[in-house]
Each structure stands twice: as C-alpha cells, then as structure tokens.
Figure 1: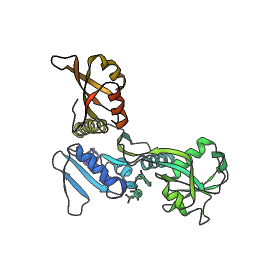
Figure 2: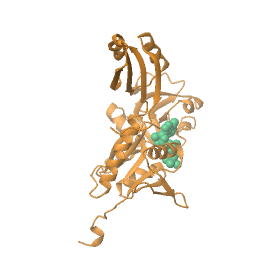
Figure 3: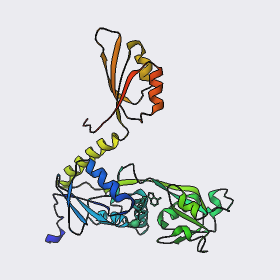
Length: 304
Ligand code: ATP
Ligand code: ZN
C-alpha cells in the first residue's frame, strides 16, 4: 500500500462554519457556549482551538457539505436546505451519501416554499403543471415535484430568484422564506412548503477511527446540554402541602422536583427545573393554584 492510501490519523477535530451571513455568528456563539475558544489566524479563515483541540474553518455555506464529503473538515454547521440540496444532487449523479444531519441546532429557521405572483388564484399544487419554476434548489424542487406527480420545468438560478417572475423568466419560484417580507416586496405569496429548515450540525455517516471520535462525542454531549437548557428555568415557590398535587399538574415539564417542608408549618418549598417557557401566564396560573413567593431563575449550565 502506498503511503498516500493510508488514511491520515488526525488528533484534532475541524468544524466548518459560515464565514459571514446568517449562520456564522450564531454558530460560533453556540460552540463558544460549549466551552470552546479559539485563536484566529491573520487571514481570519482559520480559528485554532485553545481550550480543546477543536478548530474552525470559516467558509461559504455552500462549500460545507463538500468539505465534509472530501474529509477536509470533520463536521459543519449549515442550513438543512443546503445539506439536503447537495445530498440530492450527489444522489442524482450516483455518488454515495457520506454525510448526514447529526443535530438540529434551533437557529436559522426558515422554510423552502413555492411562491407565486399575488394575482395567481392558487388552488392546489397541481396548478404548477406545465409551469416554469425558478429556484436555487433544483434537486429538492425536482424531488418534490416527482413525489407530487407534477410535470413542471425547473429553471435553475444562482440568486435573485424572487425577481424571475417579473422578468418573465418563470411563472413561480421555489425559495427560502422566513418572515415573508421579501416575497411581499416582490408581489409574491407563499403556497406549498417543501421543507422546514434550520441550522444543523452535519457530520460523516461513518464513525471516526481515531481520537476525533472522542472529541466529537464530547462536543455532542455539551451541545445536547446547551440545547436542552435553552428554555429551561429553575422554578422555586412555596405552597401549602395540600396544594402540591394540583400545582404539579400545572408543571408537566418539571424535572425531579425537590419538595422541602418549611419548618414548623404545613407549608413546603418546591424547586424544579422546568424545560418549557416560563411565561407570566403560567406563573399567574400557579399563583391561583396556591403557589406563593414564586422565583424563576436562569440556568447557566447543567451536567446530568
Ligand atoms: P454565503 O456567502 O456563505 O454563501 P449565503 O448568502 O448563501 O451566504 P445566507 O443568506 O447567509 O447565505 O443564508 C444562510 C442560511 O441561512 C440559509 O441557507 C438558510 O438555511 C438560513 N436562512 C434563514 N432564514 C433565511 C432567509 N430568510 N433567507 C435565506 N436564508 C435563510
Ligand atoms: Zn451561500
């Protein structure tokens, strides 16, 4: 076997993230909240992990799936839309799948949707038969059209898809939508949703055969702890012990509540980690059911 055929053993994990754009900053912030810190290279394209041997490569989001596929990077943070589009494109050319979504990360939310001119009296997806649809997501659109049994023409554009109908290049578009403001400004309205997307951690299908496996497992453990804590709050209150069963009914998301008797009385102090959002409405419901001296505290870190 020639030396180049021996897979290189690597002792650092390399994660590709978007250099700028919508996902760059939140991706870095999420990794930083997992305890990672870096020293940036002068050209600001590479960040050397200082707290752990986990480095960042800052790139265009469209390059991320390819960098994982060719092994330049081990993991990546990218929109599900980009990951699935490129996986679809690879599948179409007969290439084997080498990466997959490891975790959904809860930011960069948007959907890939069909949008049509405002004046189109939309009835059903079948209305698209025989029409031209402009998109930067030809693989996902073609898959969806095939699944719906619709024969339409896919017009692939690399950008400014939303102006294609006005330019007479297409009858409808298939593009990412979050607030819908861009569509409205272009006199378009969203109809069918093809995909719900958000930023995801992508990684290889095959396990790492070296120390990167332990680094990846450590990162996932910390990510799960951070993501699981997102809306979590520590809730504390006092109540008459007789009211506790009714109060617990209002707290289906309370984990391992601690109930302590308040000395020399029938009252208890209760403390629980709640996973759901602790809104004013919920606090008022608890108060009505007998809770008192309610306190909601942020949870900084948790290691189960
Ligand atoms: P790059 O320069 O890295 O190629 P880009 O212009 O292709 O950047 P952005 O516009 O920053 O990419 O979008 C990155 C990702 O953000 C999208 O792939 C998508 O997953 C997500 N996203 C969230 N909301 C929206 C939106 N309203 N429009 C476009 N993308 C969105
Ligand atoms: Zn891009």
